[in-house]
Amino acid sequence: MVTDIHGLDTQGKVAAEQGSDRTTDAIRDALAGRRHGRFTFLLFAGPAVISSIAYMDPGNFATNIQAGAKYGYTLLWVVLLANLVAMVFQGLSAKLGIVTNRNLAEISRDHLPKPVVWGMWVTGEIAAMATDLAEFLGGAIGFSLLFGIPLLAGMAITAVITYGILLFERGGFRVMELIIGAMVAIIGLCYLIEVFIAPISWTGALAGMVTPSIPSAEALTIAVGIIGATVMPHAIYLHSGLTQARAPARDERERRALLRWSNREVVVALAVAGLVNMAMVMMASAAFHLGHSDVGEIETAYKTLTPLLGAGAAAVFLVSLIASGVSSSVVGTMAGQLIMQGFVGFAIPLLVRRLVTMIPAFVVVWLGVDATNALVMSQVVLSLALPVPMIALVWFTGRKSIMGRYANGRLLQSVAVLGAVVVSILNVVLLAQTFGLLDGWSAG
Image 1 (cartoon, one colour):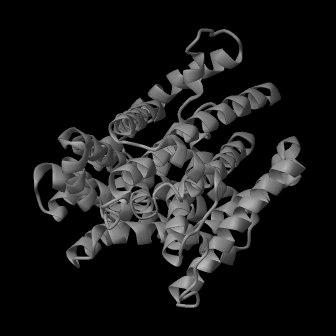
Image 2 (spheres, one colour):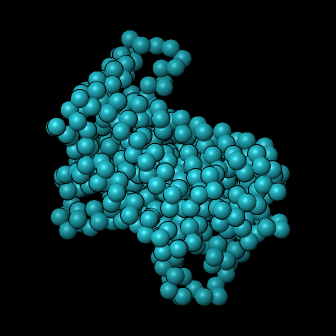
Image 3 (cartoon, one colour):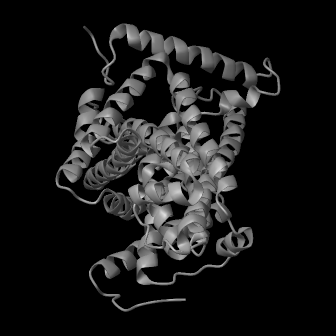
């Protein structure tokens, strides 16, 4: 049997191409003005929707629960800032793919020295493994609590479901976009319900969004974890590749139109992701901050929600966690494959890729490491890896030799540079804290 780099047989590959062609043709009709209607914009939705799931993965659950339980609404401004930074960089990633028809990993391989390329690849793979750790643990915790089974059994269920969903790629990129879109809708609906159930102080939440404050060194760790869980390295790589697969621009008019639609989709998709993250913090603050501030684990949060807000709230929480774990695991695998193929020019079969990246998660559980703490630390690892693709993306999208007339303007480039610098500084501070250089430090 002949297989392609994703492990699909020839028939599966043909089906994927046919499914992709139908959507591509519809997009081209819309670009040419031959297709109209109020739902035409949905044709252009997909890449940012898939990327947005990375901003609602189980790592977000862990960091947001800890932020809300321990510090109330105080760290909501960090969530808002991280989401705005994410919009900028996902927009740049999409622009790079649309303008050059190459993804960030490929551009890096073509324009950077080999030692740098290898370093970026290794960093990207470490980020992919840290991502899988968060996603598998999140899905496993959800299934474990839902069915009362061991955590390892929950991980096995998550692995099987994830691999099954990945096989739908043979139906074309549109099928995967719809599946992930449905997962995003489930997570968003769950937290809309939670917001109505939890006794949230809206004035306190608003104050937390606009008043920067880092109460302690522990709050700094959580804040950096929030950034690592929100602005994801693999999502920056992935978005530039997702735009390649849809409808490459054939002329300047199509390219400008695709960029307009892409920017709108990025704003909407990441605004939804940002609202979900804020809802997580607000729910945790309303439920746990007064009287249960020691709640720092997902399992404890679930068990505590039942007597506080009712079994319905706890069940909704689990449904959102499972949807998050499964869908973000799918997206993480897609990103890992793109990173490897872009940097080193080859890919491995899907099943092998799936097994390699989830091994660390199984090891963590087997060793008995606290699952939620592992989730938070995985987000710290992601935050430490984040400057690499951020800096590369800012560099490439600012160069006219690569982007031509679409190179970043002075204002956009300044904002992007500032975002990369802020994240890098936070990482340096986190390292200093990790090695005990900031013991006793506090800020108000």
